[in-house]
Length: 461
Ligand SMILES: Cc1cc2nc3c(=O)[nH]c(=O)nc-3n(C[C@H](O)[C@H](O)[C@H](O)COP(=O)(O)OP(=O)(O)OC[C@H]3O[C@@H](n4cnc5c(N)ncnc54)[C@H](O)[C@@H]3O)c2cc1C
Image (cartoon, rainbow, N blue to C red; front, side, top):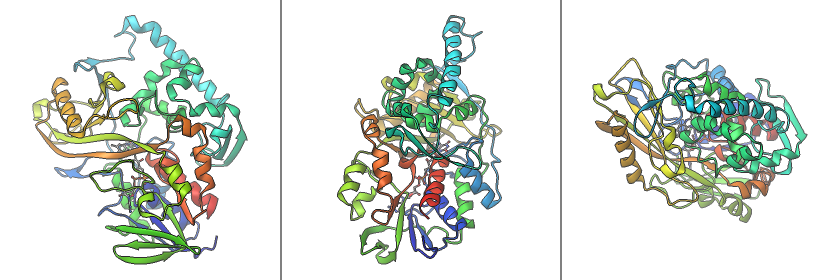
């Protein structure tokens, strides 16, 4: 593509800002990033309390976050945050050690079986499911893999593997099919409690591309990255290092694509571009109190865009930032596995103590309130359930200082995944001078979204 092509990027989160970085690295400098809010970072949101930043959104990374590492190199920064720590409680608030055989003598046979199944899954992923872990979902429904290896060099890889079609199955069914159902006890920690839904509803493709074997082991061994100034700081740094930082407070009223040009009406003015990259939500079912809209509502959306994007659903994931009295402050972060099942929708799944050296600091709480087969738990009801759960955990909140319900982890379900949703959308890239990137195209984490932007630039520019 002509290096002077004029590109509009919608969204100043990890996907949009890294698209800018990778375009720049490839010599495309005629780009503009439009961000609707007065800050960059999107779901990496790190406000300040009592002189320190806490996390309302993304918290951590792993050593295989190669795209995030590219950003760190580009900006000359590193992951310098507090060490993560965790313990476990049951729904009654009692501290437990679910994986310690000495504490659970009756569970020893199950724990042994789980260990063996972990080994078995590791082998299956290397052999039967070769190609499962590359970024994005191209070809999976057709039994192919195509993309770039998950290595620092990201070598191009492709191949035929009919078994990959199994990735369309809900993760629970995938595990049962392969005789490794107990591995869900391990995967659920960094999956459901991180807001990515339940294993009986989410296709294995999402679960395993995010939690590939190596990444899961990094979670198990707490080999994780954090950033002292918060994950938002990564993207603030990137924004500061770009030739064209994001234009904040940009309200896009309309996007029209005609005669090989893209006309974007932003804050009342019409701007002309050659190409547009959308990293903002493609579709949002229903209405949201925060005013966010899917692209098909403000674009001159075409029938194929409407047809495909209206299949997207997302998770209702709620975060509260609370303070406690000093004597009620939890000494560590806690995971509550009992609450990670759909029967306990709306309950507290994790609470995170970020700054262990300071008591006058924020605790953040996490709850999911939607499962596709169940009535949604209301926002206020869920908020109250979490507050009540904190009391049960013996860490009652004295005050809520921040809260949000996130447009989280957009995805499609198994039937659409199996019917080739991703290949149909990939075939539409550039069809209307429009490229689709951001969470739904790969997975809802910082690295997968940034990595997808890297690939998009690599493939089309
Ligand atoms: C509570 C929570 C915990 C998380 N934990 C982790 C974690 O530990 N590790 C991890 O890697 N990831 C984590 N994530 C996920 C990670 O933050 C997201 O996957 C990532 O931020 C997605 O990047 P994105 O750019 O695709 O989307 P977003 O971050 O959502 O950015 C999209 C941007 O587009 C803007 N936008 C939307 N609509 C428009 C419009 N019409 N015009 C202009 N701009 C628009 C938004 O304001 C936003 O800035 C977490 C997220 C949350 C909420």
